[in-house]
Each structure stands twice: as structure tokens, then as C-alpha cells.
Length: 166
Image (tube, rainbow, N blue to C red; front, side, top):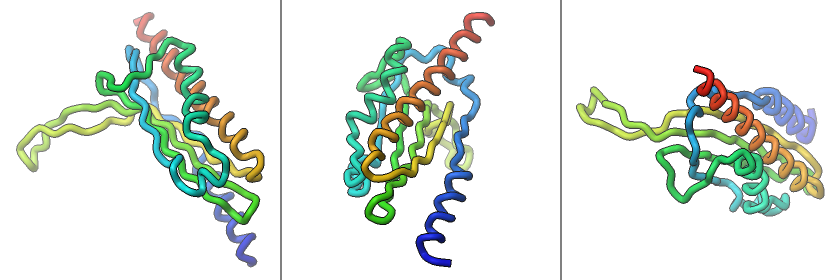
């Protein structure tokens, strides 16, 4: 098997494993403010594939802001984490995996250390793998960021509406 076929097979299997998934969004109920944290845009491959951090973050945030969710420099312990991993495959193909997660800062008691600690709890997550030609990669990834923002908005609205009926 040639190396390029093997790479395509590996990316294909990764695409199946990274198919869209989401955890229960019940923890989103009542949240009005998030803090955004994004990583991975500064990598050379992201830049070579045309990914502009500000544009991608704006595409993700647009549906949330339209729904009335506020982004703040600091919040009551709720974070939206965007993790971007990009690889330049051959000279003309880019692959980007985007993971969007909502985390809540929480405190817990660690019995083994006999003290209180702080950590993060995953409230919602969704990931997408994008494989496209280098020339169109930025536009395709932009649309995926917008779609992920829409998915989070939908989950947030569903839990907010469920909370109003309880």
C-alpha cells in the first residue's frame, strides 16, 4: 500500500471516529455568560491553510450572540473552549479537527489529599473533522465553526426552554 493511500485510510478512519458527538446539554441551563478560550490557530499548519483565528471565532460566536448569550473577559466559571488541530497533507490538502466544549469550573473534595481542589466539568462537546483542498479550506472551516456555534446555541436554547417548563 502506498504512503498516500495509507494516509487517506488513516484520515478516513479518524473521520469516522471523530464523527459529530455531543454530551448531554442539561448543564447549560441558566447560563448567560461564557468566557472564550481558543487554541491551535497559531500553529504553522493553521496559517498555511488560511485559518484566521478572529474570523473563525467570530463565525462560532455569531449564533450565540444572536441568541443573547454574552461572552465576557471573565464569567461565573463557564468556559467555551475551542481546540483546533490542523495538518497540511501534501501541498494541496488540509485537515482540521475542531473540538468545541463547554466547561464549568467546580470545586471538589480530594479525599486522598484531604483538601479541596478546583477542576473543570464537561457540560457539552461537539467535534468535526474537515478535510479539503488548501484553497477552499478556510471557507469550509469557517462554515463548520458557524455550524458548531449553531449546535451549541440549539443545545443552550433547549435546556433553557426545558428549565422554564419545569
